[in-house]
Image 1: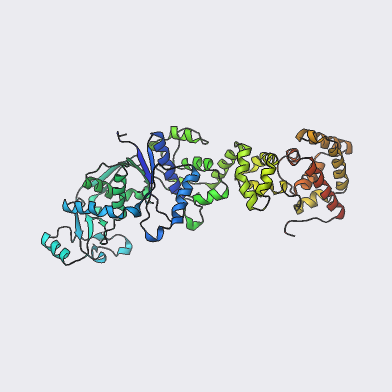
Image 2: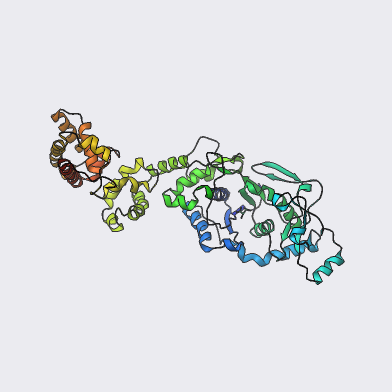
Length: 488
Ligand code: GLU
């Protein structure tokens, strides 16, 4: 590690999609900065006109805020820096480290057809006599600027993840750094920007390794300190193909909307390609900051497994305070039309109990609304197979009526898991039946479903009035032999 102050950055291009790979790059940069008391900066590479939409930039800013991975200082917008690149290129030309190329783009390459991507610069303008250059400039022939790369030997740099990497200069072209419209290409802009932002460590996707050879050469030509590089392995789906929007893979924004918790998301994503070198999986941010090292990044491609992420999200939900969960789950209840903000606020205590009961079964914050609608509405449908199995049994209506009457003897303030259990068990004994013969129809009567939380937790959370009313409702339907079913 050098003496330089640690300053890292991410430099996403706004594409309208916040890829999990970009999110992980952000997390690693942020962990590294926090660990070393450095700064984590954000540069938006928005020079592509079509891609500069404000809402696309917001997707990145909102995603970082949601993840709780905040950048330091002002956001740097590359589009606002367009004037600063050309003078650096001119200096390189003046120093003989770069040269003007007057060839129209299609004529400057030799070798295979450009579409086959093995084209190479012809070298035509590399050593043009000064006179000719002057003439062309005077005649107003447009020119790009190319970096003069060495012709022999090997370009090399040491990567914290991949070790020493090299490539023969023979295979590295004199790349264009400034186009004829005086706009920089990526490799040039990134070097000037990272230098101006005093970036000490560049941590980014390994798709940029090939670019790094050119960037290192540019730093040297410009006489600037070369940052340390760490390239990150790809993130693959369980079938080992690349994570991509086209395949329907979700971006950060969608994970956010679906009810993932930022703590779980960041924790899981940090472990896709990095490990603290012990078996820890569930880690707080502080623990990750303390354990994070660039050396702990695994150079092999890593698998992003949504099932594992769901599991981890469930773990975080289980340990979360129920009041906090109510706040998070409320928008999903409201959006689903299950209840209103006002109702939640005025029945807070009840909603906290509901959340506490459902918590063990939910892997997403949105699951509370998905599984818990019956806590808020009493006009629910009954599961049709449950009706056949548990209501259409002789004696059910009478049994439920007896249960209702046993329950009515429980004092309101004693209504609980234990007292409802005692009442039900005692009644089963009295009737000479198994408790299960009361438990199943009672669950169906009070929730409409055949599965859910433990029955007595359910009854305790619903409270005596709701339970009594729902038993009454079910008894009426059983006696009539008609039931409201889902979809009817
Ligand atoms: N805009 C580039 C990207 O999104 C930035 C690469 C870099 O970090 O240098 O891949």
